[in-house]
Structure formats: C-alpha cells, structure tokens
Length: 123
Image 1 (spheres, rainbow, N blue to C red):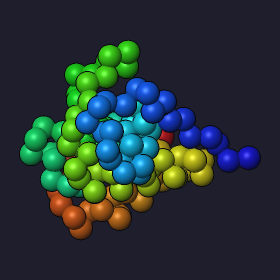
Image 2 (tube, helix red, strand yellow):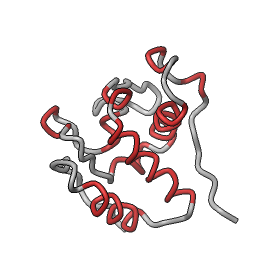
Image 3 (cartoon, helix red, strand yellow):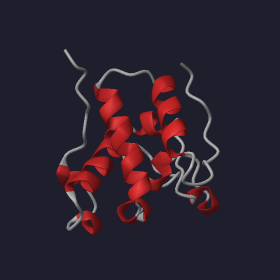
Image 4 (cartoon, rainbow, N blue to C red):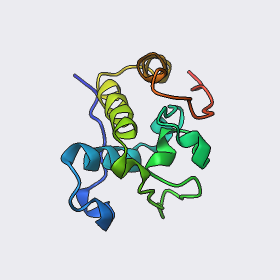
C-alpha cells in the first residue's frame, strides 16, 4: 500500500487561510504535520533574502515550536512555495526518499530563482 500522508486538521489552520484555495490550505496542513520533511527541501521563490532557510519557513516561522506553531503568511500568496510543498506531499505519499524528493525539487524549480540555504537530507 501507499504510505499515507499526514495532514494537520483544518481546525489548526490560521484565520488568514479561511478563503485560500484548497491546495494552499493542504500545503499548510502538510507543513504543520510534517515540518521535518519540508525542512530539508529548499524554496526557489527568492525568499532566502527574507531569511528563509527551507520551504518549511514559507509556512511556519523558524522560531516555531511543534506545540506552538507560528504561521508565516508568505506561502499563502506565493504559488512556488505551495507547488513545492504539494510536490513533496505527493512524493512522500509515493514513498520516495528525502534525497529523491530533494533532487526532484532542485531539478524542477532551480530555474525560478536562487535556492534557500537548505542542508541536504541525511538519507
């Protein structure tokens, strides 16, 4: 069977996402439930200039704690951030390794802009 991807419940989403598209809301729900998965994935929207260190930072601020997330509104208005998270969610559901996901994201999005300074996954 396919590994099931965990998503945080809709009720945990911040109010600023109330009118957002389902794929945006799902990306935030994925980030909330799988922070360590997005931590090893770079973002290519140019947000490194804002101090972001990974795709995760577009959804949750770097000083977030798992029990007290601090949402970042950036990804709510940025299609690249959401597309990357959606690809990671899809590939995670297919059972792909963090390294394979990282290679795919690098290959697919590197033409959009500079990568965040994101460490490679351990495996």
